[in-house]
Image (cartoon, rainbow, N blue to C red; front, top):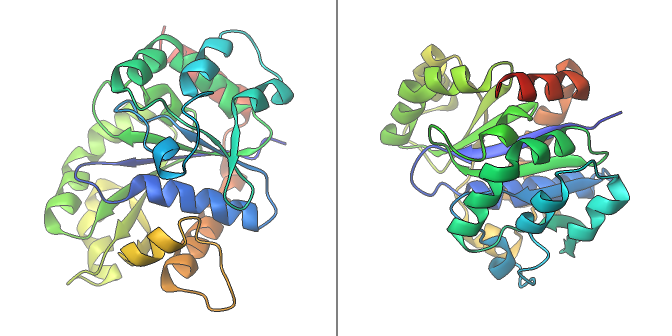
Length: 258
């Protein structure tokens, strides 16, 4: 059975969406589930530099190949391994190259990832109308919106929610709030409830933990960052029972662009 797609995005600022996508992939791998992390940020990739990986093979190469059906073993040609066994497809650092690749082949790539055997975590970059990464968000079972806990970012979610849900159709939209807040989890939930988006996690803003433990892999002493990411992963996975089958997701992707 297909294991599902989690897309990760942000609304504005730099709340750490890419770091969280990497950590979620690490949690899935630590739980003995095959996970593929795909960096599909139209603004260009950061993971190759961050993880000291080669720039190629990259998302651009995968998109070019995905214009025809690819088997899982062919998909592996574009994957690099890093950290504790995490498989990643990095995006080219050039925003022009990555955005052009997504515009030309985003739908084909979305269909491929929706039917892939591994669980897929895909970083679709900052949310904006008409993003070339939109097909990948529409292929997801869940779109995780990562925001900081300040009023400006929470307000952006509330006011942008209608357009977000309209663009995504049946995709679940969930909110992960990062950083210490003057608001309680319940108050944040009340604030964004009018948007129809549920808060699924409030994570610590622990830059030191992210730097030293970017995959959120637990040791004997579990830090708050790893504990929070683990709980978030379990929540997202538990929602997969109600996900659309891959064939219906493919139909949805194609029909939305006709």
